[in-house]
Length: 127
Image (cartoon, rainbow, N blue to C red; front, side, top):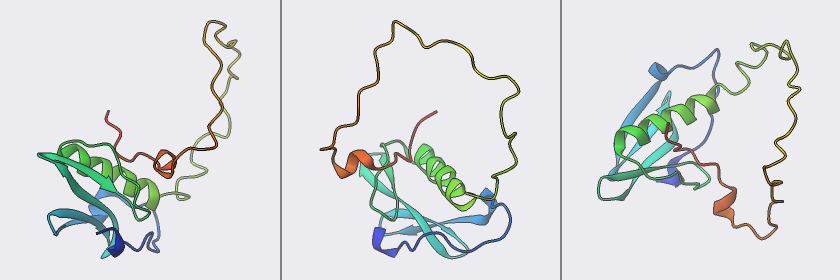
């Protein structure tokens, strides 16, 4: 199914969830915008599903309702990238002056031998 996805279509204005459409495909679901496939929801086991993007990156597994919602959220973020920039305040009114927690260990540097799956953005984060 991932081979049928072609990426981000051209659009104008902010895209909403009403602009997206679901269709069944080979036991899974394809989320489209104006007929252009964006993301797939594929089975991952009994009653479990995951989102797959055009690069083959896979989300965490969840039930169908949560997975379809995660796919819609990710698709809207992709489609509206750049459309909403400039709507937020340029800087917060008060800078964060709280000191770093001295009890928290320093963050580890990323490993150079990380696999490709580790670099994929997880699309199916649960609330």
